[in-house]
Length: 180
Image (tube, rainbow, N blue to C red):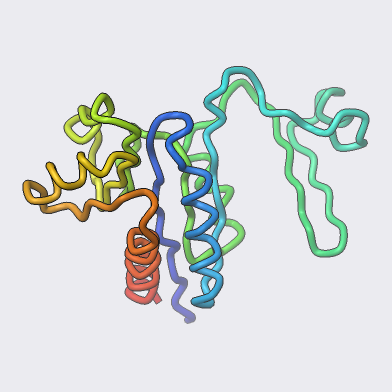
């Protein structure tokens, strides 16, 4: 019987406009360069439902009451699904159906998966105590890095320093190899 590998699940957390999407995009590119596939889950924290393409058949199907609509063309698959709410676990189960090497979660700060935490300013520092399983910290303020780096066991990087992104990519590649 073939051994089924399990994807590495990793979060990128922080408040709005802290650089999560930019960091996730860089991680995805780095994983792809290393031959790994990634599926992303993004928390839409702006209130309301995420936008869908209006006037398209798939959106019309959802508006008519379909629980889900899948569109495929040229190797691209789009899924729209509608219900009152989706737990993170449900979203991860859907992502796992695509058999990725890594599932990257953008947001969902309170979940307990290994995560990188992005700090915009010292006002966000309380998140270091409130959140669990922080593997790496990124800061927009160099003074935070210089002040806190010596006190922490967790790697602490400037958001502008590519070494931090490289560290996460190496971590994910290593974790993925352990699961194969």
